[in-house]
Length: 130
Image (cartoon, rainbow, N blue to C red; front, side):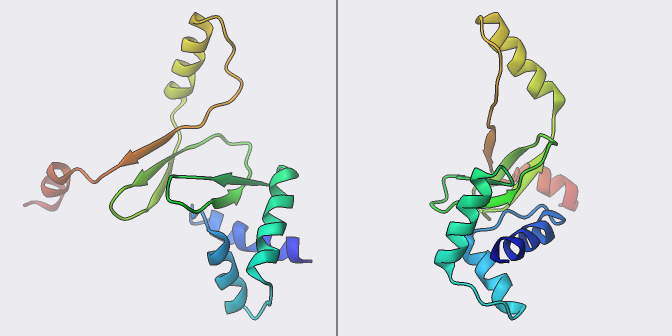
């Protein structure tokens, strides 16, 4: 039952492209009246990860974040100022990586791409009309 509750929380977060820490999952469960310890949540997340249902990300923030596994490939940008995690998809990046691997005599099996970014102040000013 605890696995289903954690999956439900992650499914709700996925609709908003949110990547949750275990503590955030705990808070979501508590807000709905479900009682589960943080330790149990970590154990459930490990089981779900091993089963291929959940993906754990370490974005150099010191805490793992989780999302539901998906067949649809995507990458991430992490805003260095706000901590916001932005998902994006770019087929050209995938093709470029495949080409590079092939040129070096390899086949691309998997990859992880995380861009660490900051808002471009020049772009913000031009968008905001300042």
